[in-house]
Image (spheres, helix red, strand yellow):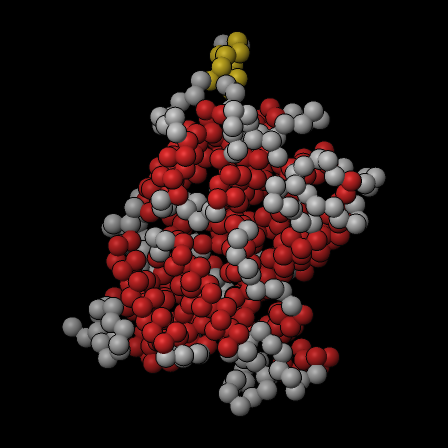
Length: 480
């Protein structure tokens, strides 16, 4: 049987018909969630001639019907990338697009976080080697946007202008690395520079693809999160560092930026992903209310800590309402960024659930947004996703990813349940307590955390993030 990659030194052993099916699956269901890559028209054979590495990454991302096969293909692709980038020193836009695509759906492709961070580092290095993060020196910045918009389809070789493909790749590097850094607080991301903003403006002005509106909205929302982290920072103990302007004033400024993005871009899109991202920005902004109170940065501004904490709870509620609007049958199509944001929201909700302050009622948190119910719902939806039948009638044969996520989510829920006070409910008008139920929890919590970290949902949280998620119990509930 003819093999698409039969003449290449990277052989996946995929026949032409199967490769074409995976390409069409990617274009119809996966690509819409990652607008940083525009797949050229044409058959798989023709596309492989001009974008061989991108084709490999597409094949890997769309091979979710069989997790073992998907990870085997991902490992082979990593071997290919190591040889061609590290040993042979090759650099091309195709390599960078392949790396970004591989990273975007890494939660299915890799069992180890180290593989993911290696891919990100390769992407950052390749972006730098290609010079995509630098404005062409011969172009005056004042005229850059207009001139580039009029030459949106130029060829990059021998041309002063960037192509829109290159601009999307640059913005993709920023987005993927920034989401990783913001959610897990361990990875050094590409910074949002004036040149990156110029590239975003060019894409909007060119109007080449409708998806560019979503792309620019995503990077601008993520840039706000980056600015929040730089302006309102924390020390190693999760205490809020002093800021010169009052916290409330800083929040008001960021809210104005957020509203601007919403009114100019988000209202033009029906993307659920953008709704999630919007609420994640709010959560990042209001999370500061959960930090150490012994700080003069709140000042006398009218927006006090109580209002900030309540706004955080409201943002979390909006996020999880948007999350449950995503059909479980589409979970295999979602890039890692949305799962990273989900994990981050669970972490913040856990901090808020166990917040102990005289002015705050913990029961109100549980009544408004019950952490245990959120985890129950998440586990049930993961199990539903495992039963997915693809739109073309093909079942998920041997994936098991979401069933493992469901099991680990229930373990996290059971662990939390032992730390929460019994929940009250009404039976025949009489209040009674709901006693802890669910999976048995080991006495040694460290063993449980180790098992949760072994793979699956939330496997990529670092030690500090897990301390936030599981709590620093030491005999007492977590206190932010």
